[in-house]
Length: 308
Image 1 (tube, one colour):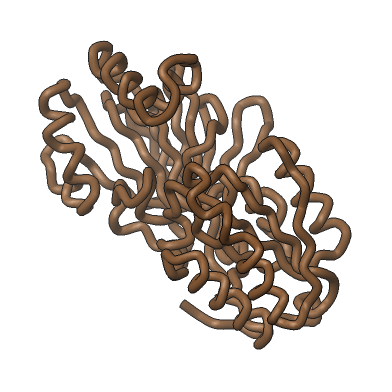
Image 2 (cartoon, one colour; image 1 turned 90 degrees about the horizontal axis):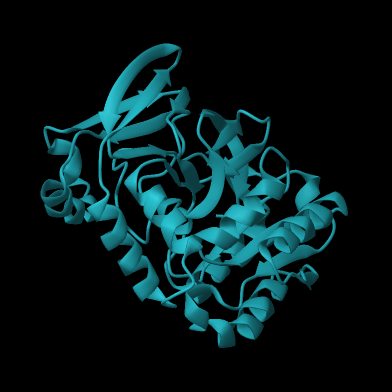
């Protein structure tokens, strides 16, 4: 991955920090003062953004970038990173993810240490030295004209359906709600008809899993798109075909090693632009609820500059 020297933008304005105190079920909450102190050691003022909801988080990041922040740092999991990326994508403002959530796929996949203190030390060193590294992002556009950026993976199959089910449930709380949602959707499992258009070439497939990755992993280390590279200007598309319940549950653990792509019902593709259509599916990008299908996803080379 190519290292580049930042321009004068890096030395102007404060370092804005978006922190999610509930990320990772709050296990890193007590680390925030130390993380902010280490960032301040880089010799730039540090400004902690105030936000209580995801919408407020995005608005605060947008305002910080518009007000001249020299960098944006996100302390949390993939959801926090996803909110911050909406503000810095396509700009000259460098970005640093501090992995402090349940799933930290984007930070780990782009080379940051999994330990939050070690990661913030990497970011602080890059700030001191004026060093950034560009990587790609994916830009997703919906039929209604809405756009979302994402860094890791968008899910548009069974996993997205499970997330949608879990988000609608009011009981039980915590991880058990997700487990129950899996059981409910497994009982309803059926292949759906998708239309995929890869760099303009259309095909129809019956599938239960569809993922489009800029990075390899989602869901806290599941290598759903194992060969995805966020510096190659391409998106990796993994399609799991007509799985029945038993076969899906037998193959699903293999996703952690990325060996599921060797199963005869799995197909992998690579393209710069991917269009995905199917009825009744809401996508999840970086684990966050995103856009309803159909969507158009485009790889955007060097769309964000990481403090690494």
